[in-house]
Image (cartoon, rainbow, N blue to C red; front, side, top):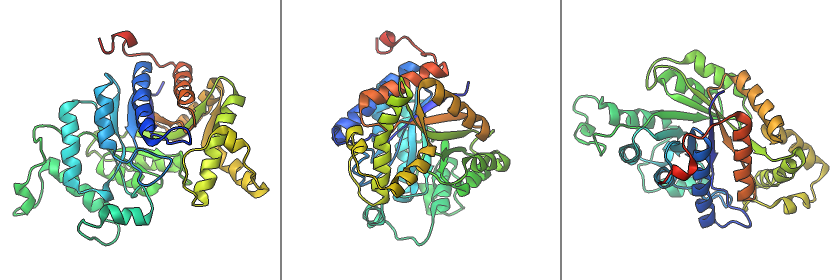
Length: 343
C-alpha cells in the first residue's frame, strides 16, 4: 500500500482563532505521527482569514521537535516571496537540527492576493515577470556551489554549511511544474485538491520527462482533500463547511471557516447548488470504506507514489477522527508505541 501523508493549512474557523489553529496543528501532527503517516507538510498563505499558516518554516521546527518519525516539510515555500539564500539558510538549519526528517516543497504562486504579495516583496529587489526558475537555480547553487567564476556569491555561504539542503519538491497545479520537476530531477506534488487541471496528465507527464537530478528516480505525490467519518451521512455534513467556504472565496468574501450548521442553513441559489455539486467531485467524502476505494482508484490512475491528505473540516476533533479512520482503513501501522514516543 502506498504511503499516506498530511497537508495542513492550520484552519481558522468561527470557533477556532488563529493561535488555537496553530496549537491544533501541533496536536494533529503528534497524532498522525503515532498513526504511521509518512509526512506532515505546512502550507504558506498570507492574509487569508481561514488559514493561520503564514510561516511554515517556524511550524516545521515546532512540529519536528514534538514528533519522532514523520518527515516534516513545507508544502510549500512560495519562492517568489523569499530570497533564495534565506530559504537555503532556514532549511539547512532545520536539516541540521532534525537530520533526514525535513522536506522543502517549493511553489511558484505567492499564496495570496496581489496587494499582499506586493507588501511581502516591496522592500526586495524589483524583478519583472515570472522569475521562479531563476530563483530555483540560485537556491540550488547555494548547495552545489556552481556559481560562475568570479561571481560575487562565491564568497557567500549558506549556513550552517555542513548541513545539507533538504530534498526539494516542486508543487504544482498545472503541467508547467510537472514538466519542470521532471527536467530538474526533483520530486513532484500535484494539488488535486484545488486544481482544475487534469491530475492524471500532470502526474504522468512528470514521469515521462524525468531525468536524474536532485533525485535518481521520479517520485510523485498526489495531494487530495478527503473527509472521513463513521458514516457517509456524517462525512457529508462535515463537508458542508467546505462548500460554503469555497463559494465565499469565489465571491471574494474572505472569512473564517464556517460551521456545518451555518453552511447547511445558508440560502444557496439553484445555480450555486449546481456549481457546488460539480466542485464536490474534487473532494473525497464518506465512510472509511467508500473513501478508501476512491483514493485507491485515483492513486492507480495517476501512478502516485504517495497520497497527501488535507482535511478541511470545522471541528478539530472531527479532523483528528478523519485521519484516524483513514489510517485504519489504509492499514497504516504505528512506528512506535504512543506511550513510548516521549519517554
